[in-house]
Figure 1: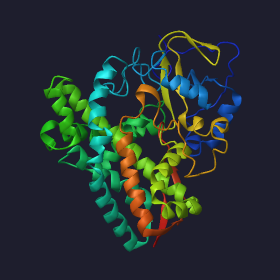
Figure 2 (figure 1 turned 30 degrees about the vertical axis):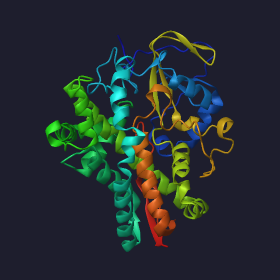
Figure 3 (figure 1 turned 120 degrees about the vertical axis):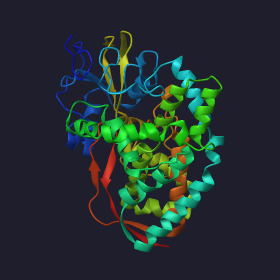
Figure 4 (figure 1 turned 90 degrees about the vertical axis):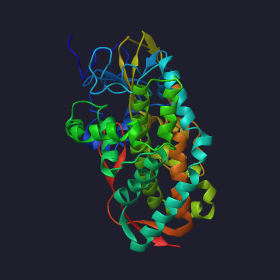
Amino acid sequence: MTLIEGHRPIDPPAGIPVWDIDPYDEAILADPLGYYAELRARGPIVFIPRYAVFAVGRYEETRAVFSNHERFVSSRGVGLNDFRIGKPWRDPSIILEVDPPDHTRTRKVMARALSPKSVATLRDAFRVEAEALVDRLLAKERLEAVTEIAEVFPTTVFPRALGMRDSDPRRLVDYGALVFNALGPDNRIRREAMARAPGIVPWITAACARDRLTGDGLGAMIYAAADAGEITGAEAAMLVRSFLSAGVDTTVTGIGNALWCLSRNPEAWEMLRAEPKLARPCFEEVLRHTSPVHTFARTANVACEIAGQPIEEGSKVLCVLGSANMDPEKWGDPEAFRIDRAPVGHLAFGAGIHGCVGQNIARAELEALLTAMAARVARIEPDGEAVWRPNNAVHALDRLPLRLVAA
């Protein structure tokens, strides 16, 4: 069988617009708004022949496909590769790339470890570290926000919360980038990410082993579930590693994106300083406005329809979450950044049973950091050009020069 990027090629039915574009082009990944707008304008579903995939970018269709786990499955891969017929680069994730009933079993274990009650016990530690970090940053005034804030904070607090005895911030960040880049085609970014795997993956595997974790962290809770017979020891190790791909890289991206939004919208920063309780809705708007995860795929597990159009079993469907979160039919003025918007229903954390299991801890980290900054920083000002880092699944910054003015 001839495959395209690890999946079976499909011929589009008559009536579906065909768009000759590469959504993984580096220029599009760095600045996707024009691509999003054209995708929505072409219809509720389009066919992209370069990769023989369908794509949805309007809010209603994207949410419908992304949340229908029975017709559009994750177990066949959330990237271009169809795990039923193409070999994945690593064992599939037992939380992200699995369907019920197996998903229900592993999700229950992860959800308990990351429940609001569990995360609440971490808030004081997050607050203390956030305040100390902001005080250090104000002493130098000018900074590169990606490496000095966005990467530093999650790679400091999250390994501690997990109970890791070993910590290597560079490997932690690069592991997440590797996992997400692997979801795309065999392009330059994916090849360069995969070339770093031999220096990253063995270290991650060893650092997440039970004997390298403390007995009082989130990782210990996962291994305790194995002791109780809810999962196997091997599954526990995989779930602990899943914390890192889902709990570090996307949070790093969220923090960088939040600082980018607030530095470009000083009126929003003034509003947040005046009312620090807006830290949570501010982060929700950041998620909607910048969509840290811009695209995930689903595979049609049965012959079905999208927007009245027939979809053949085995079809890969790109759910362009970044486009759905900028759909004016849903949000009215999507390109405006408004921290009082309360964007209920945004798709940045997914939807349905595969909604991000780590979203509680991501929100707690961002709330701690934004609250600490609101109390200490009068202004966040751009200090140079922001540069976006092309990634096949994540919309993240590479550089963000800022100047912080103390309150």
